[in-house]
Image (cartoon, rainbow, N blue to C red):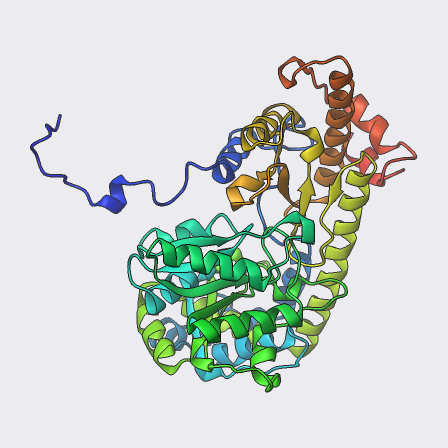
Length: 479
């Protein structure tokens, strides 16, 4: 046992809680891992709706791989390239990889803007890309402004090892959480009063967790603000290819390239991208930094040595993304399937009186459960979240984990599961809302609710004329 006079053997990072793993955001994942839903083996398990993965079009990728075995160096057709690819170590990356990624980034932005392959810097996923960018732009103690609500992982990605702070820019439901110049100014001035040095602004479009895109006017406002304050802008655009309906996605690159009427110091603009969401490749760890600043490109490329993308992955991705016909078909079909799943979930929730923020991108809904709170407090939000996790057996993420300024909002992911899991989750929510309404009439608490999710009761909902899945053939297939 160590006494107080002995030196600390481990670092502050090792002994601290900077990773943020003890938040409800990650607690929900643990609840799922301990009791995962399976339609046959564990029908009463926790359904994972807290993971923003895009699995809806993975069959298209599998089909391409089956028809293009030479794209992998681990097949008989592709093994001839094994030695050259396995021995390539240049942290610039394979030229064909950078060319393919630059072209794909343009494609996901409607080919309205082009990207220079020489400015493509690879990193180990968007997590690594954000951290490297933070290391390049700020010193420990410096801060970035971040509009709320924002992705829970930013607290880890940008703060944990860099020592950088995040200062929230409060956005509210009264205007659908849109970012305003007034909110930016207020956050900036408050930081100055606390002697916090603001080095940049981080935006996410499409937004995680909102699923909304920033319109061109908002992006122009953002550019005007960062140029006036002479601070950096990081635009997280990792969901660019998930936008499935009007209004379309506008990249900050489009505004930089096309809107000549506003002042823009390009050295201040940086884009983070990834293939994890648009292509559904989180395990490939393909993150991209695209900067208009030569010094940032140079520094980020050197730092990428600590988190490179394997050359085997680069080789495969280069081949796949160079197939124009496949890319076109994939993006179109993926958007169609995302739109369909979004509609199913919105209609199903709407039938039990649950509203969601109107959105058109990302892999999730921003669900409004303020009407189910006992009080308009974050304590009440957490109590409701625990009931949904422990009794309804659905993992959704509370708004407080995204630094939302208003209690009662929850993020619901819908692209990481099959149709059956969506059906069951909606059935459970319907039963929960119904019983919660009855309990309120009788002045019962959450603790006294006795939720029953028997197969018979779920099936009654699934074949109901009011169900978004009426007469679903999946009911017969799994029951």
